[in-house]
Image (tube, rainbow, N blue to C red):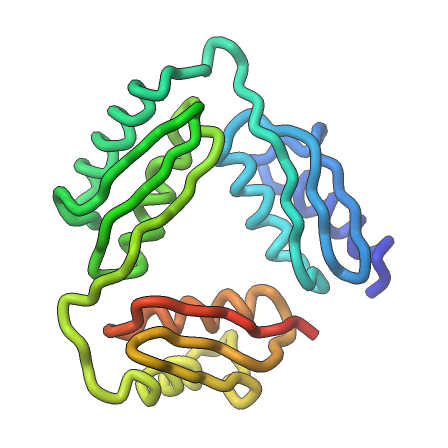
Length: 215
């Protein structure tokens, strides 16, 4: 696929997603690398735009330069955002109590602390990014498994083989003390993401470096 066709597909996907107002989003493509520019009305919409681009076949990488611009009536003070973030984290039954710290500066939310599972790390970020006034999220939560298991590499390779979205033979898994590196090539961004999700589902994984290339 050439860059012109890929750009059109990306624009079509952005316009297709009802959660995105694509009118103020610019799209440029060079050698399969998509650059998004312009502005949107919330951080959640910015995140949705990036996710939409990842769904498009042929996208090799994304440079995201979208600005979040809130209307005056939707602006919120940092202390109000922090209070709401703490509340929504406390109300989420998937998240552990008292392990997540929140800092807000000029609308930018920083999450820190330790949680047992990667899905909890994602759940915390997904919860706060939908709050009004949020301009960005830095997820610094680290993973501390409640227990370690034997043969983590074997379990990861098994999880990759079972995943219908992943061609496991093209992926090499290296692991040192719970830190996993994925090497090799995949056919699409969706396969790259599926491989990473499969790794994170294995107990004992504390970090993932996804070096898989698309092509």
